[in-house]
Image (cartoon, rainbow, N blue to C red; front, side, top):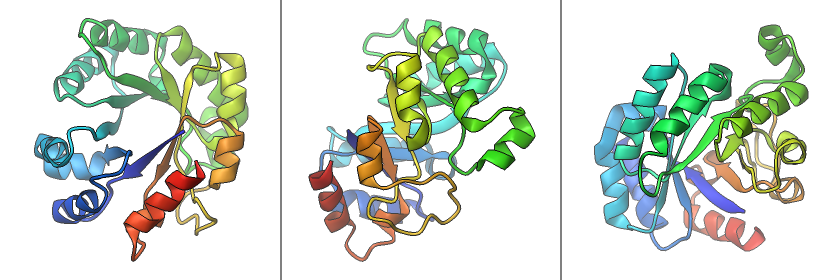
Length: 227
């Protein structure tokens, strides 16, 4: 299981300050919509300049018509990121087109499909998709697996079931991790480290419990010790 630290701070300078504190740690760094729209490719380059061994997850959750998604995927590969994601609800055709484009590159990045955002509870999810989260997350994962993606973004609680319906090697990246029981904030389907381990999560995403701490490096070291 790998730790992925979310870079969701209000400014580029704050993100860089956090990265500098973690520069010797074996972690992935997640760059989401807020940071990428504000800071763009320059942030990605600065991350690699601080430590070329940092792995970057570009978390943009692409969802559009198939050809546009494939074009966007090509652009993300060209940025040199190590992992990115698309929405599984974009459909099999779109996901296959993304993978066809990605696989034209040597050393392509990991590509994940978002199943159900961890901000959803079951009632709000069913209001849109008319299906319980547990069932639909597996359906989306099976589509992603059939499309040649490497894994999915899901909550900890769907991880084992998704692997059972795809393959044990099919990756699960699980946001909403509160390592030691911290506040859930705006997330609904949250879990601690012990649950993530029991559910065989491959990547855990941790943001606020790290960057809101007075000792972010200490929190990261404690997480790594426990995974």
